[in-house]
Length: 477
Image (cartoon, rainbow, N blue to C red; front, side, top):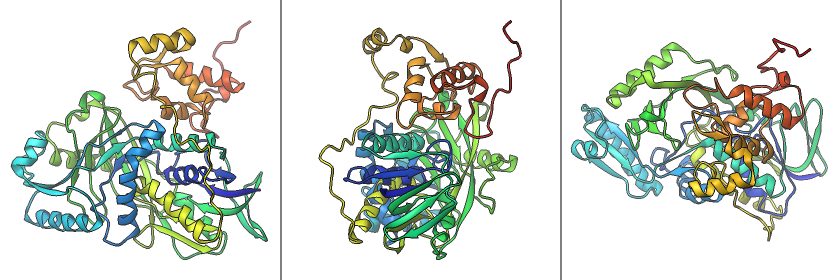
């Protein structure tokens, strides 16, 4: 029997599991997909928000600011790329300027440090490519960027290295209350635990309903993005937002921690929790508003586009509740959920303590994890020493991103282990370059098949049903 079951291995579930693994608890992470970071976390704006946008006194405000303050240390411990590049919310008229002044007051009340309003001259000095029509901006120097799925993979891996267990392809079908806790059931397995933490994202309302809690609902909000080549990554240095509306912060333009340029997202309320299709009108909106915000963005340098679904709760705030002792919801964790995730984990641990559960810190808890990108950031001399010990690091597999066979093998062998092509991609960046896997994918499939001892044609792109190869075109005789 486990002490705690965490349902959902997005960034919130990952951070909760990592926090709980620092105590003398038996922790299990239950994920419905073939890998972690497969929901909203996978298609995220990758922004660590400063915390000026959320309403004063809300959980969003409190946990955003606290999480933002924690994130740099968390990223350093987990070996995750993080850059405090600052954010700019630009205004085009006097009405925008009024809204930005209100955000300044709200941010100060929320405890955000060093916020100020810039005039046009100051704004252009910081960002020469900003639109000439912009007349002012709210400047938040504590804003930052990070890689959301890298953070999630590292947090789950760190939790596992400290004793937590991960069960993928575990789709929860029922939860039964027992005398000593809960039985969480899938079609093939039952997990018993004293406590359950519901971090199921878009499906957190359905999970809560399994114990009779129907106090909230969650619906998807579609967001499409366009990602440009690394040669475009220096067009802006800060994260550029428009003055926000009731649907969100609008189309942003931001560098990524890996050197690309990201634009988006759109914001469309949906009913279908599985519809992640992109649409032409979404891309038209991104391109139009990007050109309004920043000059000279070359969309002919686009390397990929994608869509994510945000989990929007019915209350307007994060839904972190406990309908009964031992069961905690972390639902409706939309933006700024990534930014707030370390603080959400801390908050939930405190809730368990208040309910009387013993959380004794492990003397041997190790918060640190080797970076997934350590090899590519090593000096030539350091790389040569690594290659002397393991020749697989001397073979480039992904030419676009310079990823070696050794890095791919480590991704397949290191917690949480990559089990499909997309899993390797998220851990190593192999397949993320200009050719989008056109050259390296066949060899990565071969490595996966060999490491997992399965047939070449049984390797998938992202889990069940996503087969890449049906049969060989030529058979050896």
